Length: 83
Image 1 (cartoon, rainbow, N blue to C red):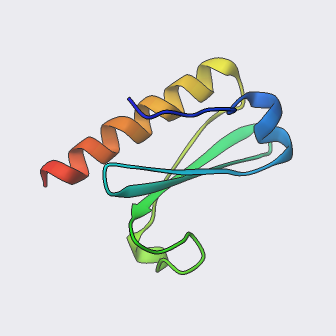
Image 2: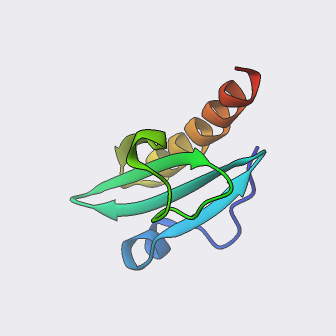
């Protein structure tokens, strides 16, 4: 499971959250009562990664939605590494 120190719903309402796990990077933001999540391959930062290399998903802006988003990142990164 990925480590997300300091990540909370209140944090996401004010700031974007980024991290990396197992050779992939992830980006979380909030808008319109949703958590928007993107995973993309290393080594580039979010802005330098081509849009075609980014995979997006959305979750409700709630504690449960945040848990689901983290699980999605973890499972998606695991699938990417096996491919």
